Image 1: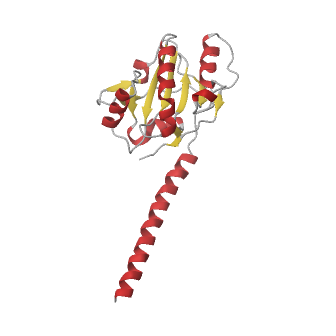
Image 2: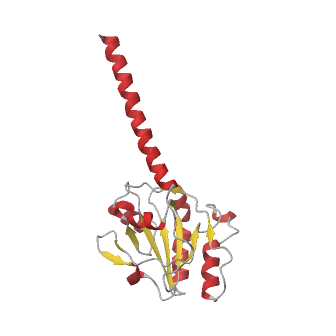
Image 3: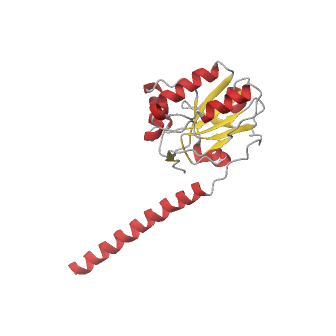
Amino acid sequence: MKKFNFVSLVLAMVLVLAGVVAVAGAHADENDTMTAPAIGSTIEDFTLPDTDGKEHTLSSLKGKNGAVLIFISVQCPVVQDYNERMEKLAQDLKAQGIQVIGINANVTESPEAIKAHAAQKNLSFPILKDHGNKIANRLGAKVTPEAYFLDAGNKLVYHGRIDNSRNAAQVNANDLRDAVDATLAGKAVTRATANAFGCVIKRA
């Protein structure tokens, strides 16, 4: 009887683990199949709540020259390496009429945790909570951090990484800033996409 119970327990554990793997695989597949809008597409206005539950539209937050949306996370170590750079970016772009907007789509991170993290890291730009990953799905966002630059008319000008290294000392390509600078100068963006890297968004 004891042997039978042990075998049953082992089989139950295997089935549970298989279920966990299946769920994880489903989320990975969902991320893999996400498709981002094409460069040049117009991004429709949307509404999301901030960490206090107050709703904001993209049109109400963006600057006169556009907006940069960055999907971020509280716990992702790659995002942690970018916190200071994102805040500096937000300050610099705000002076140029472009608003940085953080979006947290991780089902595992609560508005309270997001708010506390923003205060701890001195993040001054607005951070919205994407419940149910609706905007992440619409934009095809897969990882944190992942950036989207929209011009004054909400046209998608750039999508991808912020720069080329999570180590600030090793950065030698500022893809996002280059796209913003070119657009503000009325020039063509030479690199409109660059693969984002970081932590997979934990979808609902």
